[in-house]
Image (cartoon, rainbow over all chains, first blue to last red; front, side, top):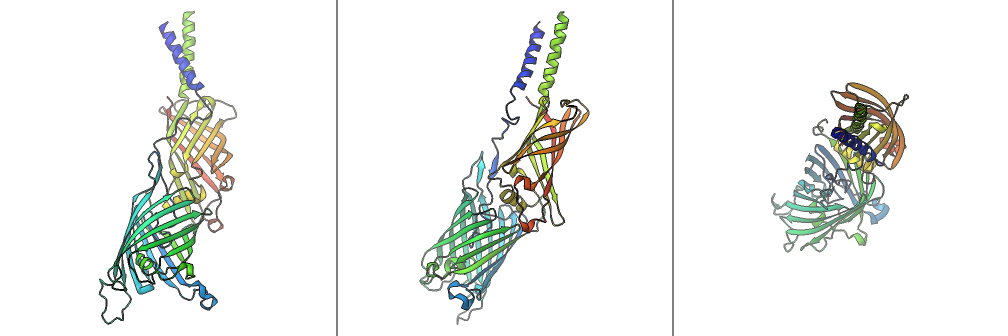
Length: 294
Length: 187
């Protein structure tokens, strides 16, 4: 008799499992521990001039060609500034997903620059939430243009260093923002009273207008004693992404395309019409070992 | 008489335990897809597919996170999430379907058998729900239940737009494979 009761219970419990069937079979299976990394806060590793919160992935080589033209306001005489082009060409490489290096050369002052950039924190959502991404970039710039001064500047005199902290957040799929304090040290200055070390507070905004097009703004405010003609670099532009290419078209008062250049050598006044057209073209190649097969 | 009652109960008990066993699941199902054109080969795999088969009711459901697809090239993965599947907006893909067979026999997990099935159901992805058909097999070998299936989806059905510049790099119709190895009994 006892057995019968037991079997009855077994039978009933079997039926109960059936009875539990609600609308979805998957109910109660959601993984509550899942953590998702937030990616794609910006289209490229640079907002326009400044480092963005984006990194190259491991094994990616980013060939960048950047152009800054003459001022727009001279009109057709200079073909809206297109007669005067300056360029920076660079190769950036992702050593790991969180570490990249880059080498660039600008036509202005024949500047050569190298940098290393690393991600300390990545924004995540889910079980573990990190509200911001945090990155740090450090670089060295040397001017290699021949000097005609009576006392030739030494290698040290032509050197500059910078370190930049990038804190950014992708607020939603469209809007991202970053703050990027930047410290630039120039071994030699234009005037004896100028500060060698200049602090710049950078800010970057991105607003996606479609899946492949975004509006961007990049601004740096310099703090410290610089020559009176030096202004703060402001750039506004549009990012267009087409597969492996990213085109960043923009208007800016800055011609410098490295940190020393745009923070301490920008002379145009954006709101007085010293605006130039420029573009960055980024092409990504996969050169490293492919990711392991699954 | 008492013996008869006992056998009757035994029968009920056995059939109901079988029914209980008839609901199986996995959290590590595999879904992969493949696009092959002369210009580009695109392959991706998601190994965290959640799937439940309710054999008693001939039903199957599976779900996955779009971000869980892994590509060989990280940039492709980023574009897949950002531009094509918009995984921030539509994080999941879900399928709800039922097994159909002409003789309408229920799915039974009998040891050492292979059954072929046609499954029809609704696949929801990228904010669109469409009826799809899967060709599937259920294999029970050495008490281990596993299932596999394939189906095709037209990107245009799911409102996934391919820009003209890369139109020749991506197949219009994508073949998708699903593998559910060693389904466990649901407790």
